Image (cartoon, rainbow, N blue to C red; front, side, top):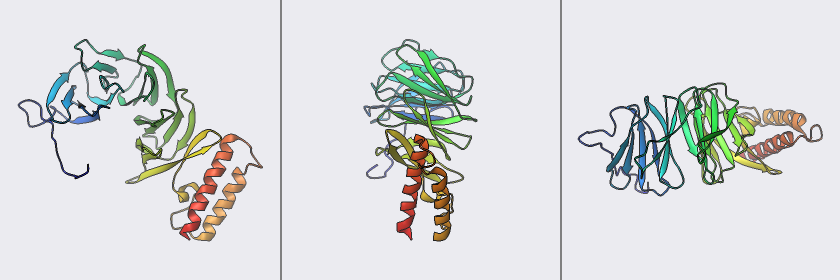
Length: 279
């Protein structure tokens, strides 16, 4: 990353490619030693990151592999497939993988919780599932999206889950309770930065950056000021002021003391303060 130079290509034995078909998922272990890749050839391959050496091939899925993710210990990884199963593999064991089955669609994304024995999965069945991987049991199913969910991300502190869907929304969930906190106008993929910002897809060719806002212990995310104020980016000052006043009347805490409403008013004020220096 420092030099921006290509430094490694992973080749399978006696092959110019890494897999026999398209590679859909790649993940680096937490200790930085290994890489796993999942492919449409129905296999997962384990590579040594530094040398690019193929260490092992994992077989078992019966359809394309769309997602892979490492646990915190660097010894276990999960894979999700179009065969509607999640498999948990131990890289130091040749025992059959543990299999999780509850989704009715393809498994599209996987994320391990940073501190707890929890795995989260998303699917084309519109749902997100939270699993206890110590007991190999389903904890809960999160239902709110109205189209396939293609991307998941967990904040560094493990308290927030973001999910990106084909329905044109990004959902913000509290972990581990699974409470829906917020719905954003965005799309997949989703990722958290180290400073807590959320990066998502947008409409067309846009990438959106959402800033985290805290009020009374509640976490929320706000986008660009013109989106929050419902105006175009180059709107004139009078238009912005009128929109701000309309929103302020709608969400003013004197009218509604609901916690969510107060948080929205704080976001609106913050957006208007961002507009002012630009004029």
